[in-house]
Length: 225
Image: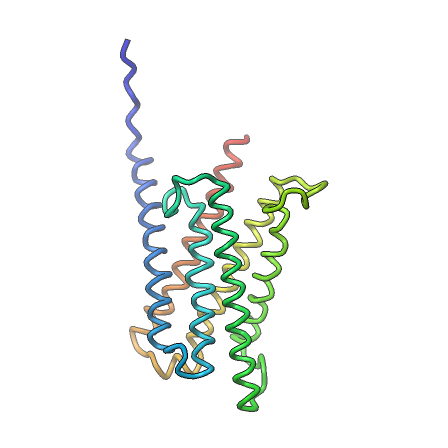
């Protein structure tokens, strides 16, 4: 008796195609936007230049790629074990925090040298909040990496809390990048359609990542129900 395999339904194929396309688009946006800011800021040309460069690497590239590792449609290492993905995710997030800290240090020291007030704009306030949030997120995730620290806690609940707080942190980072595009430095360098295209990059990435995280947990709830 020959058992024929069921062909995937057109709706399922279309869903998979859109998910794969969205993930691929996010990879392209995160890398392209980071390279664009690197070319614009020319890191090393001044102390200030390190601020936009490092912050963009942290929140546009590293954090995006760290989240996409768990995407079933766009992970560059989807064939590797979940444990390996967690280790790579942890490493990328650690580098993300380091870049964010260095980027914040660069702008603080630059303002100190030029005798300018600190954190007087919405970009500055949201930026320091984001750096604090991503640092706290990494510390709070340690029980997931070292399960011996999770005594008395449900790992399933910790994973849900980590995903939810991670999404909030990512949205804060995207908001900080968007406000950075409104700064005098960027607005004086980029205008017209190029500015709107630049603003679309973190906004679109945030929407796709938000959809990925929410869809993953909706799917888990369906399986558990």
